[in-house]
Each structure stands twice: as structure tokens, then as C-alpha cells.
Amino acid sequence: MRIAIVDDERPARSELIYLIRQCEPEAEIREAESSEEFLDMIQTETFDVCFVDVDLGGMNGTTMASMIKQRLPATQIIFATAFRDYAVKAFEIGAMDYLLKPFDYERVKKTMARLKEQQSEKRPEPGFEINKIMVNAGDSFRVLDVTKIVYIETEKRSCKIHMADKSFYLQNESLNNYESNLRKCRFFRIHKSYLINLDYVKEMRVSYNSGYCVKLKHYESECLPIGRSQIKEFRQIFER
Image (cartoon, rainbow, N blue to C red; front, side, top):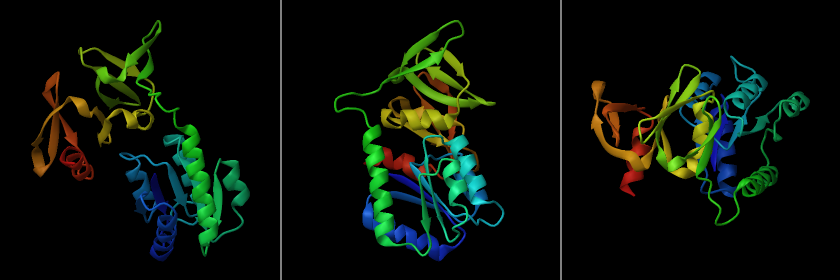
């Protein structure tokens, strides 16, 4: 489970992280101490759930939650705050739960149990693997085998899907949505603008300013940049 905690108070973040780990030791948890830091974070990352404080200094937490829902529609929102007065507003914008500070272990445990139950309900039946996506091909809708997709890149407000046969499809979808849908199909977000199929990785090489880029089979003339925050995780995939 990938979890983000957005709170400008370090002690509150630390307390919530401790309680979550008591319930879900394997959870991958990321912290953000401001709305700006978190908005930068979701340019390259997706989360199953975000715990958001109401008082974030420069931005109200309910506004932040609305933005999360727009960019990451599949992400659950849980408010974690000392303010009681925003509960109605929180549920109006689709929040899953509302935790009050100081946090109570049993209350957090109940919330995490609900999250795990929802996740298990979303999983496909055993033996059923989704390896197709449908795209708009202009005069029809075409079903693509995801194993034939080499990479997907952002193009203005759309996405361009590059296939192994060098064909491409321009789609009015966000890269965040593709990342969420293809996460289990060996795709990895190397950069805020690129989602690649790991089975087509040919090599990683040093790029300008001591950065790195990756070359993909069938597209050897291009070298796609790897975001600095993604380099460590990308290398670990091939070092396991």
C-alpha cells in the first residue's frame, strides 16, 4: 500500500506514521510538509491513500483534497486534523474518513482495516490478469495488448502511446491514470512525463548534468530522462 501524509507539523506526521506501521508494516509511506511539496510529488508518484491535514498554511486541506481527486481519482482521501468543523465538507468532496488529533491507535487501526478491505475488493479474481487497454483510434475504439506498448509520454494535456511497431495513439487521458492502471503490468514512471514498459529497457546511461536516461528497444535513437527522485527505485528493480 502506497501512502502519503500531508501535514506541516513533523510531530503529527511522525505519530501517524508510527500508528500506521503498527497496522500495515509493509506500507510505503511518503511525507510532505506543505501543499507545494505534495503537488510536486504527485507529478511523478501515485498513492493508494492520502492523509491530509486541514490547516496546511498556504492552502486549505479541503482544496488540496479536491485537487488530489482531480489528478488521482482512484486515490482515497482521509483527513487527519485537529479541526472538527470540516467533517461535513470533507465527506462532500468524497473523503473516506476523518481522523481527529491526537490520533488514537484503535481509530487508526479501524481506518486501515477499511482501506485493506477496499483494496481486496478491487483486486481481480485469482488467475484473471488485465493485459489489455482500449484506446480511441479516431473512427473506432481499439484494444491494445499492453505487452506491445513500449512507453507512454505526456503531450500537452494528452498522452501519446508508443507501440513496438512504431505506431502511436494520442489519447485524452492523464499519465497518472495510465500509471495507476498499468502498475501491475510491469510499467514504471521514470519521469513526470514518461511511463515505460520495463520489458523494453535496453540500457541506462549517464546524461547531461550528471543525470541518467534510458534507451528502449525499438526506440534506440531516443534517450528518455529519468527523474532524480526515481533513479534509486529504478535501479533497484533490476538489482533484486
